[in-house]
Length: 201
Image (cartoon, rainbow, N blue to C red):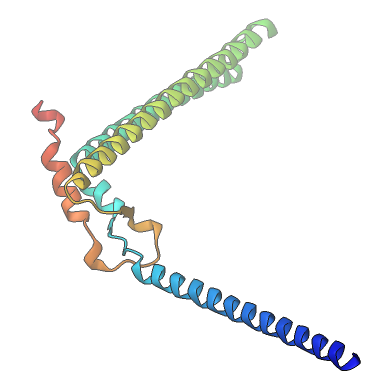
Protein backbone atom coordinates (compact mmCIF):
# COMPACT_ATOMS: atom_id res chain seq x y z
CA UNK A 1 0.00 0.00 0.00
CA UNK A 2 2.83 2.38 0.90
CA UNK A 3 4.59 1.52 -2.35
CA UNK A 4 1.42 2.27 -4.32
CA UNK A 5 1.02 5.61 -2.55
CA UNK A 6 4.67 6.42 -3.18
CA UNK A 7 4.32 5.46 -6.84
CA UNK A 8 1.23 7.65 -7.16
CA UNK A 9 3.03 10.59 -5.59
CA UNK A 10 5.99 10.08 -7.92
CA UNK A 11 3.69 9.92 -10.91
CA UNK A 12 1.94 13.15 -9.86
CA UNK A 13 5.34 14.83 -9.38
CA UNK A 14 6.47 13.72 -12.84
CA UNK A 15 3.25 14.95 -14.45
CA UNK A 16 3.59 18.29 -12.66
CA UNK A 17 7.21 18.61 -13.75
CA UNK A 18 6.19 17.82 -17.29
CA UNK A 19 3.47 20.49 -17.22
CA UNK A 20 5.93 23.08 -15.90
CA UNK A 21 8.40 22.17 -18.60
CA UNK A 22 5.72 22.49 -21.28
CA UNK A 23 4.63 25.85 -19.90
CA UNK A 24 8.21 27.08 -19.92
CA UNK A 25 8.58 25.86 -23.45
CA UNK A 26 5.41 27.68 -24.45
CA UNK A 27 6.69 30.86 -22.79
CA UNK A 28 9.98 30.56 -24.67
CA UNK A 29 8.11 30.15 -27.92
CA UNK A 30 5.91 33.16 -27.09
CA UNK A 31 8.95 35.34 -26.32
CA UNK A 32 10.67 34.14 -29.46
CA UNK A 33 7.54 34.85 -31.52
CA UNK A 34 7.25 38.36 -30.04
CA UNK A 35 10.90 39.11 -30.81
CA UNK A 36 10.48 37.85 -34.35
CA UNK A 37 7.38 40.02 -34.85
CA UNK A 38 9.19 43.06 -33.48
CA UNK A 39 12.11 42.49 -35.85
CA UNK A 40 9.73 42.03 -38.74
CA UNK A 41 7.96 45.28 -37.83
CA UNK A 42 11.26 47.17 -37.64
CA UNK A 43 12.35 45.73 -40.97
CA UNK A 44 9.03 46.62 -42.57
CA UNK A 45 8.95 50.21 -41.17
CA UNK A 46 8.81 52.68 -44.09
CA UNK A 47 11.65 55.14 -44.65
CA UNK A 48 10.60 58.77 -44.24
CA UNK A 49 10.89 60.90 -47.37
CA UNK A 50 12.21 64.21 -46.01
CA UNK A 51 13.50 67.43 -47.57
CA UNK A 52 14.79 70.67 -46.03
CA UNK A 53 14.81 74.40 -46.77
CA UNK A 54 17.37 77.03 -45.76
CA UNK A 55 14.96 79.76 -44.61
CA UNK A 56 17.72 82.39 -44.40
CA UNK A 57 18.36 81.98 -48.12
CA UNK A 58 14.63 82.18 -48.80
CA UNK A 59 14.33 85.42 -46.81
CA UNK A 60 17.32 86.94 -48.62
CA UNK A 61 16.11 85.97 -52.10
CA UNK A 62 12.30 85.89 -52.07
CA UNK A 63 11.02 89.12 -53.65
CA UNK A 64 8.19 89.59 -51.14
CA UNK A 65 10.65 89.21 -48.27
CA UNK A 66 12.94 91.85 -49.77
CA UNK A 67 10.02 94.23 -50.30
CA UNK A 68 8.76 93.83 -46.75
CA UNK A 69 12.28 94.23 -45.40
CA UNK A 70 12.62 97.49 -47.31
CA UNK A 71 9.30 98.72 -45.96
CA UNK A 72 10.46 97.88 -42.45
CA UNK A 73 13.67 99.87 -42.99
CA UNK A 74 11.66 102.88 -44.17
CA UNK A 75 9.43 102.69 -41.10
CA UNK A 76 12.47 102.66 -38.82
CA UNK A 77 14.09 105.57 -40.71
CA UNK A 78 10.87 107.58 -40.38
CA UNK A 79 10.82 106.85 -36.67
CA UNK A 80 14.46 107.93 -36.27
CA UNK A 81 13.76 111.18 -38.13
CA UNK A 82 10.77 111.87 -35.91
CA UNK A 83 12.77 111.05 -32.78
CA UNK A 84 15.60 113.36 -33.88
CA UNK A 85 13.14 116.14 -34.67
CA UNK A 86 11.45 115.92 -31.26
CA UNK A 87 14.81 115.73 -29.48
CA UNK A 88 16.07 118.81 -31.32
CA UNK A 89 12.90 120.75 -30.48
CA UNK A 90 13.29 120.01 -26.76
CA UNK A 91 17.00 120.80 -26.79
CA UNK A 92 16.38 124.10 -28.58
CA UNK A 93 13.74 125.12 -26.03
CA UNK A 94 16.05 124.19 -23.17
CA UNK A 95 18.90 126.15 -24.79
CA UNK A 96 16.63 129.19 -25.16
CA UNK A 97 15.75 129.06 -21.49
CA UNK A 98 19.41 128.78 -20.55
CA UNK A 99 20.38 131.69 -22.82
CA UNK A 100 17.54 133.84 -21.53
CA UNK A 101 18.53 133.07 -17.96
CA UNK A 102 22.18 134.00 -18.60
CA UNK A 103 21.16 137.31 -20.16
CA UNK A 104 18.84 138.12 -17.24
CA UNK A 105 15.83 137.90 -19.56
CA UNK A 106 13.55 136.56 -16.85
CA UNK A 107 11.92 139.33 -14.83
CA UNK A 108 10.28 136.90 -12.42
CA UNK A 109 10.51 133.36 -11.12
CA UNK A 110 7.01 132.74 -12.43
CA UNK A 111 8.15 133.53 -16.00
CA UNK A 112 11.11 131.15 -15.71
CA UNK A 113 8.95 128.39 -14.20
CA UNK A 114 6.41 128.79 -17.02
CA UNK A 115 9.10 128.19 -19.65
CA UNK A 116 10.51 125.21 -17.76
CA UNK A 117 7.01 123.72 -17.41
CA UNK A 118 6.48 124.24 -21.13
CA UNK A 119 9.66 122.29 -21.92
CA UNK A 120 8.61 119.49 -19.57
CA UNK A 121 5.16 119.36 -21.19
CA UNK A 122 6.68 119.27 -24.69
CA UNK A 123 9.05 116.51 -23.57
CA UNK A 124 6.16 114.43 -22.18
CA UNK A 125 4.11 114.96 -25.35
CA UNK A 126 7.07 113.94 -27.51
CA UNK A 127 7.59 110.78 -25.47
CA UNK A 128 3.92 109.82 -25.89
CA UNK A 129 4.01 110.50 -29.63
CA UNK A 130 7.17 108.44 -30.08
CA UNK A 131 5.82 105.58 -27.98
CA UNK A 132 2.59 105.47 -30.00
CA UNK A 133 4.56 105.56 -33.25
CA UNK A 134 6.82 102.79 -32.04
CA UNK A 135 3.82 100.59 -31.19
CA UNK A 136 2.39 101.27 -34.65
CA UNK A 137 5.65 100.17 -36.27
CA UNK A 138 5.77 97.01 -34.16
CA UNK A 139 2.25 96.09 -35.31
CA UNK A 140 3.19 96.72 -38.93
CA UNK A 141 6.34 94.59 -38.63
CA UNK A 142 4.30 91.80 -37.02
CA UNK A 143 1.86 91.99 -39.93
CA UNK A 144 4.75 91.84 -42.41
CA UNK A 145 6.06 88.69 -40.68
CA UNK A 146 2.60 87.10 -40.69
CA UNK A 147 2.14 87.90 -44.38
CA UNK A 148 5.55 86.49 -45.27
CA UNK A 149 5.09 83.36 -43.16
CA UNK A 150 1.66 82.66 -44.67
CA UNK A 151 3.00 83.11 -48.19
CA UNK A 152 5.87 80.64 -47.66
CA UNK A 153 3.73 78.10 -45.81
CA UNK A 154 0.93 78.18 -48.41
CA UNK A 155 3.39 77.76 -51.26
CA UNK A 156 5.12 74.81 -49.58
CA UNK A 157 1.74 73.10 -49.13
CA UNK A 158 0.99 73.56 -52.84
CA UNK A 159 4.51 72.49 -53.76
CA UNK A 160 4.30 69.30 -51.72
CA UNK A 161 0.87 68.36 -53.07
CA UNK A 162 2.57 66.96 -56.19
CA UNK A 163 5.67 65.58 -54.44
CA UNK A 164 4.20 63.95 -51.34
CA UNK A 165 7.20 64.35 -49.06
CA UNK A 166 6.60 63.11 -45.51
CA UNK A 167 8.20 66.24 -44.07
CA UNK A 168 9.80 69.50 -45.21
CA UNK A 169 11.97 70.94 -42.46
CA UNK A 170 13.83 74.17 -41.89
CA UNK A 171 17.60 73.68 -42.11
CA UNK A 172 18.00 75.26 -38.66
CA UNK A 173 15.88 72.50 -37.08
CA UNK A 174 18.66 69.91 -37.39
CA UNK A 175 22.41 69.59 -36.91
CA UNK A 176 23.05 67.82 -40.20
CA UNK A 177 21.15 67.14 -43.40
CA UNK A 178 22.37 65.39 -46.51
CA UNK A 179 22.83 68.22 -49.07
CA UNK A 180 20.95 66.07 -51.58
CA UNK A 181 17.78 66.73 -49.54
CA UNK A 182 18.04 70.51 -50.03
CA UNK A 183 15.08 71.95 -51.99
CA UNK A 184 15.79 75.61 -51.14
CA UNK A 185 16.44 76.57 -54.76
CA UNK A 186 13.16 75.03 -55.92
CA UNK A 187 11.22 76.82 -53.18
CA UNK A 188 12.78 80.21 -53.97
CA UNK A 189 12.19 79.76 -57.69
CA UNK A 190 8.57 78.76 -57.11
CA UNK A 191 7.87 81.58 -54.66
CA UNK A 192 9.27 84.24 -56.99
CA UNK A 193 7.50 82.79 -60.03
CA UNK A 194 4.18 82.94 -58.18
CA UNK A 195 4.62 86.41 -56.68
CA UNK A 196 4.00 89.63 -58.58
CA UNK A 197 6.14 92.51 -57.22
CA UNK A 198 4.18 95.54 -56.03
CA UNK A 199 5.84 97.78 -58.61
CA UNK A 200 4.26 95.68 -61.37
CA UNK A 201 0.74 95.60 -59.88
